Length: 90
View 1 (cartoon, rainbow, N blue to C red):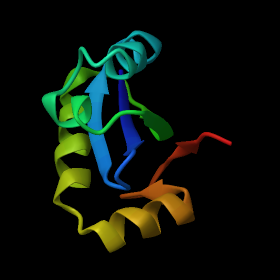
View 2 (tube, rainbow, N blue to C red):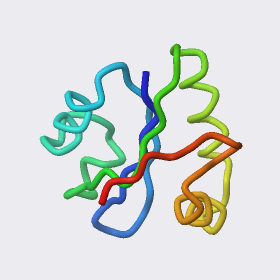
View 3 (cartoon, helix red, strand yellow):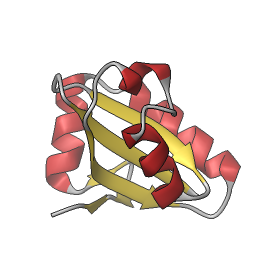
């Protein structure tokens, strides 16, 4: 399972979770995923976290979504959130 963070065209950040990161990213890029990202294409993967199960993924997603924008950007810069390493795309 993965928790992922996308940067949208308008500069906003979108967080989601999935069991197949590549498939989900393609769905976002094709405008078939979340309504939020559909109107903010293109999107770019900026970071992801791999976890063991859906429960962990949902929990981390919810916690990350509760952060302020400044806190989200700080976590991305630090490469970690809640003591968990973020894998960042180059």
